[in-house]
Length: 228
Image (tube, rainbow, N blue to C red; front, side, top):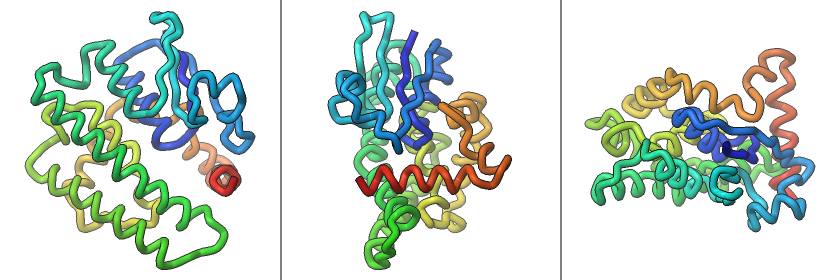
């Protein structure tokens, strides 16, 4: 059994999608970022960096893993799925995973902060992060022109990049001119595990549809978090 400590963010979705894909039993512990749950001493024992997601593996004496990329690698190696075991295949997956960890995630994250959450709109800063996000998404599009998935078969590299790329509109970035990326985003969106994973720990989209306030509340909570 895996204990998953998470929130409704792209990095959080990476872990829940992987758990769904691998059919591993897990228990969700929702972390309220606005209330700073992630800074509580009990959570810092799991992740000293005070960020989500994090997991504890009850089958491994409660072994804790933090950093979303490390979680994906751990789960893939635990099950022998979603990542090849041969050196070249493994490194191909890890390259595209690191591409997301070092590029797509940080740049889209900053685009989100300054375009969506920051009260003072600093246009040159917004432009910088949106332009770099578009460049990185274009790299994905080019890769996907001749490849169904990013690194051979469907893998943790696809999960990591999809969890972020699918939210490009939230970053204020258009992908109408990136047809291969569009195809891949839509293709993964049809996977049951992806559909389930983005509803953990709760379905932000459903909240928004039901009362029209879900997205607004989510933005307000994240704004509180990023400005602390």
